[in-house]
Image (cartoon, rainbow, N blue to C red; front, side):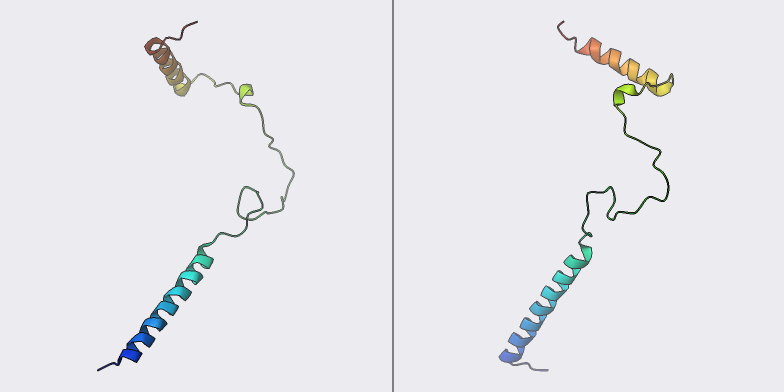
Length: 86
């Protein structure tokens, strides 16, 4: 099959046009919905009463456990490795 120069130009234009349409449609499909600043993508009305409220981290005390022990050991090591002038 022999194609003329005009046919080649037309095929090239159609290919570029199709690629542009595909790129625009994929970009629009991949765009997230507008967020209203809520935690998720969309805001949902609560079905019950809110029972959780923010609190200061200073109010948190870690009970005795392996994790607390590891934190204490790490803290003591760091203080011995890099003593701070007092």
